[in-house]
Structures are given as structure tokens and as C-alpha cells.
Image (cartoon, rainbow over the protein chains, first blue to last red):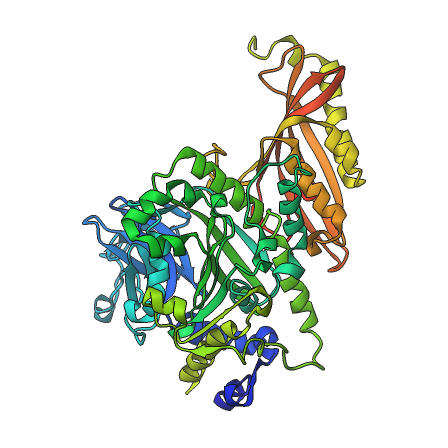
Length: 443
Length: 174
């Protein structure tokens, strides 16, 4: 019953020129419960950067779906991921976003855990009169079923039944490397993350990251402000990506989809001098080669399904999606910067990030408000099916296009066009992965 | 006590500072944007730090992220332009905002032509489309300077205390 209903929520018939999704996937609390179990609790989820925990006993708190997760570096330097819930009554054993602690002692009944997750003390155990069976239980913090890292990006899974992390990330690793190779020492989270909550379904954010189509209609105020600055009509001199240049015939725009639901869009940049990375581009070229350096100056938005997103236009953003309920989503955003970049590049990066990406910026709130308006619109039960996911279907290629070939990357699908096509086939991968995980879960 | 000095203990100065903060709140809540912008010096600093730990806001806008940082009034003018353009769905229709400024005191650093003013802010705003009220609260630090016979805002720092942010957060509801 569940299986059949879920299968009926995504219409995926490329041969008939049809792709669409049912609005119940955005509004039905039962679907949301299944998503938490079969998507978020059954695949790899991004947890944080290894560089957030440089020293022994450092820890960070994060989430996999509804599950509070404690990532710790033990006394020997080994990283581990655990469910942040005392085995006794369930209370959180670590309470701050980050910190350093050799032991985590539950504040309720005093059970104490080491930074390797093992139980080190059960308060007053000798006098407890526990029956023998109690000693046979593992009282340690529950480790995540899988925990792995890709070049310092930490991922965990609550299900053991997942492919290796390398297989899961697959071809996207080439593009993750473009994020991670910004300097010889890599990339860092600049202090000052922020979180915001929107009253909408999490998949609205999954789509938005690779949605080229909304740009000219949702962000005209930002685009015009950039134009005003260029013409000297604004007293504010900040350099930013000029979206109006996207319409130039020289601009190339493309999209790729990958196995396991990942997807990206990219575009050439008319004036790369607005990129902080450009200040160091000669060194970047020497390190990664001309081709990759050129790609690193392109705009690239990449979703690692279901909850990790990189958005790179002028500056570089990492977004983490945490669904709270069918119609509420928490976003946590980080400004990423090249380790060791010049003070001028760092400051430019910060101002660009605040200008565009911050939820207090001049682009993101317009997206967020659109998600809330969509969610309100989903109240209309007389409309079941979304329209327009077929945009780009007569242009999409199976496999790599010439740009992917040049890079040696093998996407599942590619599109490449001038600006106006604004492909929507790039969303299909996420919904196909959603359906695969959901069907696997309820089977 | 000597560090604060006579200016900070002068009731007339406290009244002057309070009136300017109330006037600023009035201009925002009345959407009198030109009057609001005119309260700031051209080279004003407008700064809303982000947070890097539970009790630690970011401290250096050149090397750490802020929620908003401008070193000039032009940044605020961009935002006012955006609201007036009607082309930002986040600020169209505008929420009704309601600033309450309290606990006003003069702090160290006051002199004959400069007032350093600390206050608490409580901002309720009503989102007409959604028919909901939301609340943001924080601490303000203003630096006021006497310029051509008028007191102007040379610096405004807003430390937002409930920083799990709502969908809309801009100069008008901070």
C-alpha cells in the first residue's frame, strides 16, 4: 500500500516527455515521517569539517535528520560519530555547538562517557542491585552505523546498508575537490555561521540550489543593485557577480546530475576579477592546472543529496539542510574561504557573502519567502501535480557533454545552453533518489 | 568613574541620546527612510555581528562573518532602494514593525562631541501576508557625533540575541 502510494507520487516517464511530482511530497506529514526514516536516516549525511575538531577531545554537535549527533576526536586523535543520547534515559550528554571535553557526563543521572564514546562510569553502580543481564549490555554511546570522511568532510549514516562514501559521492568528487583545493592548505569555515528557519518543506531548498530559472524573477532587486553599483548610482562599491551578464551569448550555462541524487549547475563568469580566488589565480593554475583553475572561477552550485549544498558565485557558501517538520526547515550556512588567503581577498569574500548569501543579505530572503509562499499554496488540495519539471527535456543528454568530457567527469545527465533555457531536468536526479530510497525503505 | 567623566553623567546628554534613539525607531517604524538615512554620517559603520559560540559574537568584521556589515551609508542606501523598488518579495508587502528601545545609558568614551550609547531593543513585527507576529531582541551600541550642529549616528552595532533567524531579517526589523 505504502509502496504503491509512494511510487505514485513521482511521474517519471522521459520517453513520454513527462516528469512531475505530486504536491503531497511537500505537504503530507506521513510522507515526511517516511522521509526521515528512509531518506535522512538511511543515507550518508554531512556532519562537519574535520578541521572543526583539531585537538584530542574536541567535539561538535550536529544532526542526522531528527537524531542529535555528537562527533568527537578521542584521546588518540581518532574521530568518531555517536548518537548524542544517554543510554539510560536519553538526555543529551553534550550541550554546546562545539567544545573540548575528555568526558561527557549526563546531567540527569550522571552516566559518564569518554571521548571515544565508551561508558566510563555508571553512578553508584556497586550498590545498584542490577541483575546480571545489565552488565551484558553495551552502555556506551551508540556509534553511527557508518562514519567516514572525504578529504576532511565528515559524513555519517544511521544505516549500515549504504555504499562506501567514495561510491556515494562518486563523480561529484571532482567538483568537491574544486572547493577543497582553493589553497594549498585547503578551505576553512570562517567564524560566524548562522541558522535560519523557513516555514516550508526541505525539498524546496534542495531544488533552489540548482534552480537557474528563478534568478531573474526572484532576484531582480539584487541584480539591479549590482547594476546601480557598476554605474555609480549607488554609493556602495562592492563587487559582485553580474547576473545580467548571464544573458550574454559568450556565457555558457550547464547542469549535471549524478548517481545518488546529487546535482549541479554551473556557468562561466564574464568578469572573474569579482572572485576573491582570482587574486591568487596564478598560483591556483600552477597547483591544479589551467583547466581546473578555469573551472574554479566558474559559478558552481552543487547539492550532495539530500542535505549538503555548495553555492559558489562570487564567494563560496556551504549550506546544511535540516528538516524539522513537513513545513519547517532549518538551514545552517557557512562562509568558506581559502586557508591563508590575503586579508583583501578575505574581506571581499565576507562582504560578498553577507550581500548575497546571508539570510540577512539581499538575495536569500527572497528565495526563502518564495518557499513560504509555495508552502502556503500547497494548502490548495484541488491541485495535485506540479508543472514545469519537463523544462529542458528535449535538450538533456544522457552522460557527459563536451565540458564534462574535457574534465574527465561522467555525469548521468548533462545539459548545456545559453542562459534562457534554465533547465529543470537537473531536479529529476534528487526525486529519483528520493523515490529509490523511499521504495527501498518501505519494501 | 573618572573614565566615564562628566558628559556621561550629564542628564541633558542622556536625554539627547535617548531622543535620538527614539527618533530613529520612529523613522523606521514609520518607513520614513530618507529621514532615517539622514541620521547617519556618510562614513558610518553599521554592524550586526554573527555568533561563533553560545556567548561569543564575531569580533572582527574584516576576518569574521557578520550578519550585516557596512563601513559606509551607501550599503544602507542599497537596502532602502531595494525595499522601495517593490522588486523584493521578502520586503513586499513590508511587515509592520514596532521598535521598543529601553535601558538607555551612556557608556565610556563620551566626550564633548561624541556620545557612546548602550540600549536594549525589542522589535515585534507583523507579517501581513502570513498574519503572524515575530519577535527579535538584542543590544544596541550607538556612537553619536556632532556634525555641523546636528547629532548623527557614526556607528551602530546590533547584537541580535535570538539568532535562529526568521525568513526576513533586515535593517527594518533589527
